[in-house]
Amino acid sequence: MTDKQPNRVLLIGKPGPIQEQIASALGANPEFELADVLSNIERIAIEISAVDPDIILIDSDITERNVQEVVDDLSLQYPNISTVVLLPDDNPALAQQVMLAGARAFIIKPFTQVNLVNTLTRVSTLEAARKRVRSSAGPVVEQRDRPLQTVTVYSPKGGVGCSTIATNLAIAYHQERGGRVLLLEGKLFFGHLDVSLNILTGNSLADLVPHASNIDDALINDVVYKHSSGIHVLLGPRSIQVAEGVRADNLFSIFRALQRSFDFIVIDAGNAMNENTITLLDSADRIILVTAPDLPTLHDTSQFIQISPTLSIPINKLLIVVNREGVTGGVRMRDIEGSLRHEIFGKIPDDEANAIRSLNRGVPMLLRYPRSPASRAIKKLAASLAGLNQVELVGFVPAAEGGDG
Image (tube, rainbow, N blue to C red):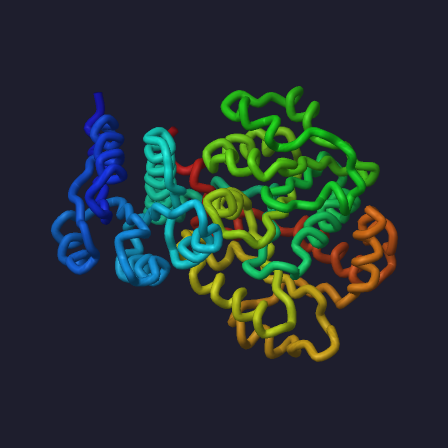
């Protein structure tokens, strides 16, 4: 028996089969209570005050307003309430928009009751862990005094070189520190690490999904690929259909197993913003936020920095790296720091020609052009990471590690 109160869910959606499905799923699960249902958003402020929900579940069909705007308003006005959005399956761009607006998760329609409950459970677990961290920052710092073990390379803007940086950074870190280093392709859709590293294997992260709750070192060693550079590589699913079936809870379990098996992990998270990406950002010790000296990329980077607190990402978890520094016509470095209002952790000089040659030949730039300015900058970045200590993240601990177990 437990005295734990159920999570109160406020549903905003039209009457019909979806509403009935949600009511049935929550009614059968003691961890959740369907506190109330709204058929429009006009009375949402009054209802939130009266119901005091833990989770707001919004059907994107409920409003003529852009659902991104609704989520944005809720995230700003009620930062302690988790928002989950039901989305259609024909608009993948909308998923990224609502996550950037501050949603904790999204669920694609049609969905199963199991998928609904699993998503809400993960959201409530993460939020509970964040609250525990915020209330006990002092003791946590003492327990986290250890070298960095994981970094996630990410950018909200595509085409800025996340995969190139992640690949060469993993190799540089292995050269700097040795040990077992893993390059994880967290870019589950349209990843190309197999091309850039000239890897021929049928193994991928998808092979671990069926065993997510019980992964041992032997299975990991069977699935990962040992590259000639000395690093290990775990590719993303080779099929879009398979990638669509990878759930955040399974991804997190796989990540935890990989942490036990490797000394250092570099994750190429690409530029998508979805529940799996949030899991990889949440789980890593630090996030290398890649930007470039052009206004669209700087705009997206600035926006991500601004919304990171709504995603429960501490600002000091972000390490800003400027790629293609010095490109002709690019924004000057001092102006970049001013516009982002954030210290720059690393700079990688523009070396597009060598980067493309390396990519086309399947040989990482650090190995093919080790003396190029870009390669030297990445080596310097790896050395800086090797010198960081996790204790610097004051009061932060990955969500799954908080709590009493």
